[in-house]
Length: 253
Image (cartoon, rainbow, N blue to C red; front, side, top):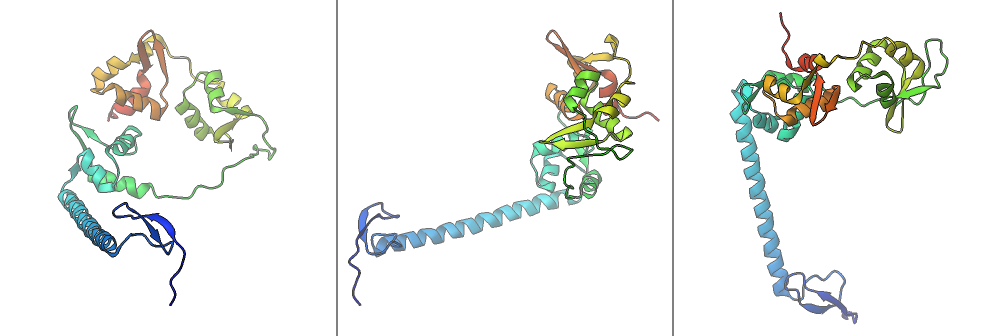
């Protein structure tokens, strides 16, 4: 059979030398380079299989080490559910996962609380966002507030908006990633908002750190994820004592 007269300039993938090939699929300049490349691929495959077995063994040992434990550390919890430590802390800050702070460096989580979290947060596909809504009389609502406009107009916190909206069934729609609330219903509900807090109702970050043994970042996370109201006076930041107590202080019997 006649050989091809085509000559294609290529670079050997093993030794890096330039050579002329007769086919586009040729990867190596000679048989020796092809054999070296084949042996290297075999070594890499064996290495990957060995590393996979070691990782699997480590995971099995970690799972076995927590089987008989009732309380787990944050790292053990992260290993058990397959997430990072920060993800566990975010669940704790949001109030979704109960944790016990024994000291400033020791936190323990009950395994039953982890199982409860997983069983009560089953993934459900969200329904399509509403682009229109009707009032109690069946008439279309055309005037809306954004969440930011409600906060600025009525002087309430982000969490208060959503809590009152849920309690009073305020109609809402979604537009370009924003939640819009019925203007008429908001005027009716938020017009009777409580009196503005007095100076003695506020507590500084430093006082919260001392009272609850928290770091500045932990307080910031609580404020962020619970939408707590805050104000800044000079270089000091204050939050409402009643709101932070409702989150951190255990209920009294």
